[in-house]
Each structure stands twice: as structure tokens, then as C-alpha cells.
Length: 82
Image (cartoon, rainbow, N blue to C red; front, side):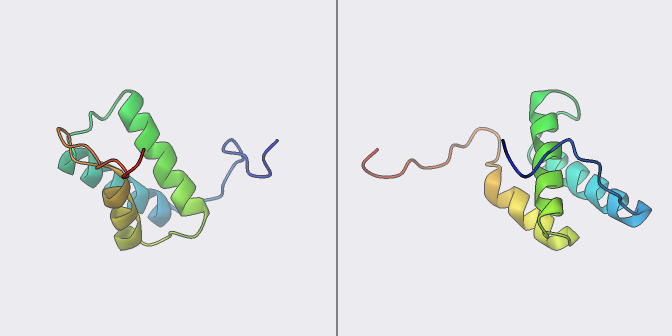
């Protein structure tokens, strides 16, 4: 059992919710992620997880998402030897 629960309630300010929404919308637009569906849900969970572990600025959340999500139609290069 994990010590970290994704379902644990988190108290957030209106400003924090707005920031997460802006980052979500920016990444959806930039990476052509539909606002609903599996990819959107994954993105939302990813952003919440990063936010909970201290990636708490808009700039840092955008950078983390851009590093993790390849643009549609591109694939991350595979590691050599595997």
C-alpha cells in the first residue's frame, strides 16, 4: 500500500485551481489533447501529482508537462539497448 493516496483531499486556493486550469488548457491546446477522455484525465492526474509534490509554479508545471508529453505524432526516442 502506498503512503501517498491520489484520492486524499487537498485544500487548494482559488488561485491554485486557476493556475492548474491554465496549465491544463495550455497543454491541451499545445499538444492537441481533447479536453475529455483518457489523455485529458491522465494529464489532469499528472498535473495534480506534480502540484502535490511541490511543483507549484505555473512555469514549472508547464515545463514538467512539456518534458513528459510528446507532441502528437511524435514518439520519444527509445533508450539504446532495449
